[in-house]
Image 1 (cartoon, rainbow, N blue to C red):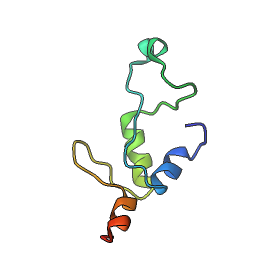
Image 2 (cartoon, one colour):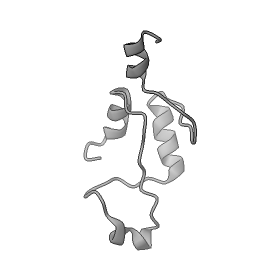
Image 3 (cartoon, rainbow, N blue to C red):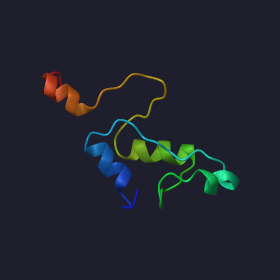
Image 4 (cartoon, rainbow, N blue to C red):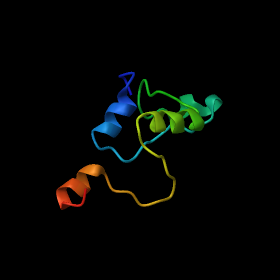
Length: 74
């Protein structure tokens, strides 16, 4: 993201999916989808998500907080 706090801002706004760059460094220039996309090691990304107040999970179903508010199930 362009903004330094873009990940945190997105999560606080209700984002429930994060798309990290996992392409190896030596191949990254061949697979650039977004200009200026921040690259983080997986563990760094995990720590950033925790620092924003969320618990990252893999391969589990998850709905955004907005969904639960909309359904009246906060």
